[in-house]
Length: 78
Image 1 (cartoon, rainbow, N blue to C red):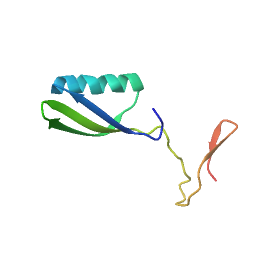
Image 2 (cartoon, helix red, strand yellow):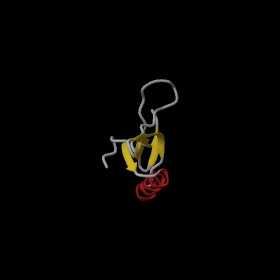
Image 3 (cartoon, rainbow, N blue to C red):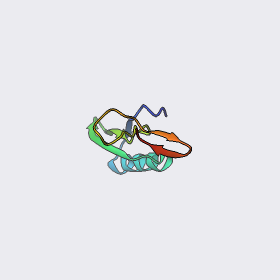
Image 4 (cartoon, rainbow, N blue to C red):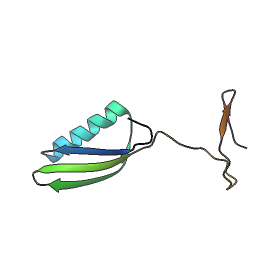
């Protein structure tokens, strides 16, 4: 999965099966589901979910747009 893609879709014929699909996906990918929307679509239970993005930008806390850098293994903000 591309780090910039955080939308997932699951479907199953039962709510318990949907839960097992989602739980199995989480265990396999080691990602949290931040937001889910579960609906019944005909005879299927479906879920659209947003995952925790892998890409995080750390900024200095001064309210500016200073992005942090790693220098010699240490995280530094400007």
